[in-house]
Amino acid sequence: MASRLSVRLRATLATTAIVAVALGVAAAVLAGVLTGSLARSASNEAVRRADATAKVLADSVTIFREPADSVTLTETSLLDPDVKIFAYPVSSASELSAWRSTATPEPRRRTPGTVRDFRSSTAPQPAEAGQWAPGDAFALATTPVDTADGVLVVQARASLEPTGDALRALWGLLLPGIPALLLLVAVLTWLAVGRALAPVSAIRTEMADITANDLHRRVPVPRSRDEIARLAETMNRTLDRLELAVSRHKRFVADAAHELRSPLAILRTRLELAPPGPLAAEALTDVERIQALTSDLLLLARLDAAEPACHEEVDLGQVTAEEAARSRPRPEIRVTLEVAADTVVLGSAGQLRRLVANLVDNAVRHANSTVTVRLASDGGEAVLDVCDDGPGIPAEHHEAVFDRFTRLDEARDRDAGGSGLGLAIARDIAVRHGGSLRIAEEDRGACLQARFPVI
Image 1 (cartoon, rainbow, N blue to C red):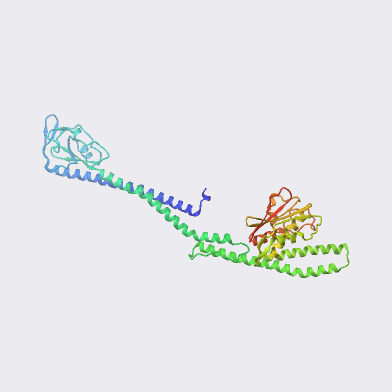
Image 2: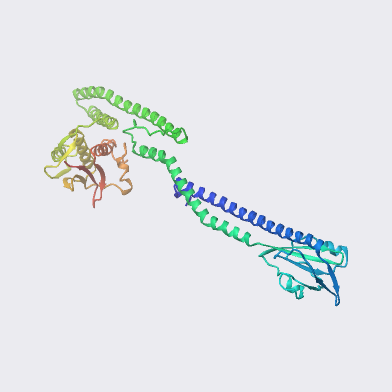
């Protein structure tokens, strides 16, 4: 699945996922640290209140023993609303030390006496009724006060509500803020990666348009001196070497074919003037095939070099009729014509004549008895069909036959067969004229169909 996603999308998803994980961890750590800090602050405040009240009590409280094993608080000069005072009997110093300043939810209980809470009532109350129930809303601290007549336990509390309010405010900011920040990161990453990859799209588009006929074109090099710029420079240097190699190859083919024409013409003239005989006739046939191959190579070299063709109005019907009526090595094959009049195209008359000749020669070579040549207009296009009643072309070879030097029937006599360049030349000519050449479906034999835009 990942391979189907674009680099831009993969980079955006990866960046957003990494930032999401980082923000989640940071939010969790921040909430934990804030919770611990506020809880410690509340606990310290409770201890401070307890210690402050204990100091006041140590200086100003008098305890009187009463019958029935009870203790009564008779005087206090300062009481915080969040502080309670209890009287507990303590029998030893070790028990007293256990009551020193702590932050437990409530003090350890012994059998209490009675306590008088001056904040609410002067009537005696049981200690259990005056104590706070443990809970999460408060931090509790207890401190014992050692007096001459006994021990008082001071219990102070500090509210944890500010801690809860702070946490709720924090999550109120984080819950909408983190998704908004992730969206912003995704958008900025998408735009930044798109801007960084824009030169890649331009390079790809230019490379897709470069063919063997326009190797002089080069891909654009971005101004930034980064990896993409170096990639574009490397591709341009590769295109330089490719253009040089292809031009040398084309020049070699054209020069070789051109240099062969004169010796072959002289050899053919001598064979024609030689005394008649079987050997001279066979040699003359071979020379004619070599001359045809040389001519094909020269034409291919000109087509590959993208030489400008003559753009003139050509009566394709007349060209087709003339080439179809020309005599061929197999006179027993009948060529029938179905040519529409006034089919005019724009191009080179010589190249179009060569296209029709190659198609008809190929059909005559493979036909059993009849070749049909049809030319008609179809929706602004000239459609040329050249069909034969021969064995046909297998479906798996419909494209291979247009490759250069391709001959499917290897058992055919080389004298009767072609060089394998005729259909390749015909397709190149059709493409140069803005048309196409393919194999059409036919019930019997083979049918090659060429299409050209008409004027």
